[in-house]
Length: 559
Image (cartoon, rainbow, N blue to C red; front, side):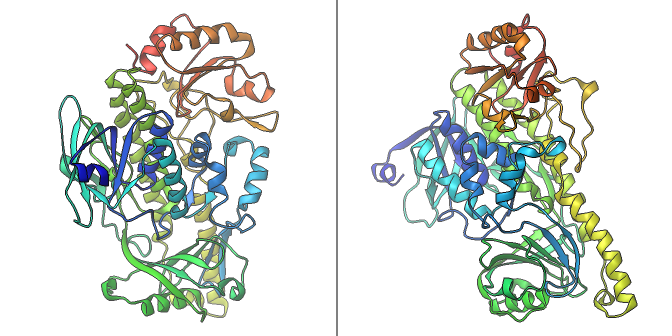
């Protein structure tokens, strides 16, 4: 952009993306893989330094697998043999109250092929800091778009008309003149204080300012290094450590498995953390851990828990909003970052199809129709998880010696063991997103499975994720899909599948035909043709291709 700045030139792109967090970078990958010219700008100097989000859900990992980066992501974060348990203590060095044992990264890669039922997936969750994910997404986005991410550049303003969006971007430090950008579309993936959303006058709706003992109110965040923590911890190593006592409620996630941690402490109503120092951060860590350890504070900050907000609209004309710009979560369940990646996946293939002239612009109207209900759904789940842990009350007696303390700890153990499974064993949240109200899908309303956080019922009913299967116990069905559209057909319906695929190709669409004969595929197909979208959502099912033209006209908005 510096060249355009010096020359006073206008940058012409198909899509301008404001925001280079996971959402904006994932969108750049989706568009770049499809040959769409895009420019990403972000006022930050580079990708995140602080850990921020720390849990990548299985569905997000499946999307990373789809674009070819899952193995690279899985190799980052914790060492392959580091436990990924979630554990609760009165203090880290004293009484353990509850624990959910989960596979290490190495075990997840080995065990995923043997799982059936709700957790039958191409990928399992991965515990990795957002800072590592962003670095991978950035590297691939730049390679795939052929353009560096514009870190250190901010969106100044924009206006739109029937033909496109005219915007100005400028160095965030005020060091030079603004550069004009002419784009067909603008996407605001620029966070909770979104410049794009505010310019459009679109408001958040929902709950904010919810106060709880924990996960409701101000939180003090510390990125720290405690190199002897593992040596002095008197319990099994975990990934997340939660301190539950009357003095301070805390959660702490392992960042690198070498002694770096993301530490988040609840701030009491009478406290003002605005002037807290690194010494205060060390004091809070000692209070939560119950250990006197050498600690190096790398950064501190504050944030507010208790939000469950969703924007009133996701689109206005040629401008779209995604990620935290349209939904703001309390981070229980790790749903914010993962929902943001889902936004990018949904919007990416649709923008590309319209920009290539394969679909009518009306296709883009389905983005809000499909993703806003999911934003409402997921913020509601996160709020429920926050209530489950945050409303649990504690007193000093929880740490007392003797029968009373033992009885209280036994009760806390029962409550917290139930809670940790409610919040972290969530295949329904992970895989159960649906878009049955979308005009693009032929959903059967009488066969929609119940939406439950801790239960997932695989179904090929259009409107949800294609059920997964391991073919021959080794090959993921998802790896057999085309990158764009796929017609899945039982061998007996190959001719009908061929006719359906050819009808899509006649409209210029990239359509793969797959006829898996492995027995594991039979329950997925259930003797029917399945039309699978680029985002792995089933759009249509049937046994004949007699109405193929009408089907394609609806699912892809072809003329």
